[in-house]
Amino acid sequence: VNIRIRYFASIREILRIDEEEIEIKDGATVMDLISELKQRHEFLSTKNQLLIAVNGSFAQPSTVIKSGEEVALFPPVSGG
Amino acid sequence: MITVTKDDFSADEMVDKIKQHYTGGVVTFRGVVRGESKGREIERMTIEVYEEMARKQLGTIREEALNKFDVQEIAVIHRYGDLNVGDNIVLICVAAGHRAEAFQACMYVIDELKIRVPIWKKEYTPDGEVWVEGERHE
Image 1: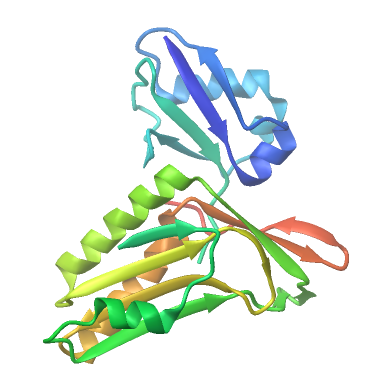
Image 2 (image 1 turned 180 degrees about the vertical axis):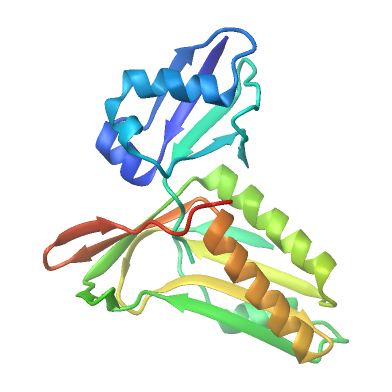
């Protein structure tokens, strides 16, 4: 299935990409996706504080990602 | 009433907008750009936001606060973009019949915002720029 990944803040700057589309296997979870992304982008392996959202809600490692969903990766937030 | 915007805001205007006939008080929290951070001088700041998710998260936090506390209305505005020292960043206004619940609800919203809403500050200091990273989301 095809999904869209968006990156924000320090992660976006270090990877030098705002977003990308990738193909993952049917039934893949957030944890599977993260492993795949860590292989593509070495920097993500060094980042132990990584937050993941699927369609605008914080996701669990076991969350299954469906086709067309938007996944976002970002560091701990600092608004307010 | 959730707003995520580049534009500045007026706390007074928002207070007038949300107060109702039975409102006894409006608690306002207005966050501004501080000229220092962890001992470093701050010259200016850029705020980045994941807008769609920020609106959704702020809406959820607002609903939670309206359910948890005996308050009448809650408005939240968060800015993004380039800001200077002293500029407004965030506004939370809570209208209630009585002050205690209004203060509690306001505190709840700002505390949750700082943990759950995808917004990030980048501070510019004389030694360079630094992304601020908050507490880890649980």
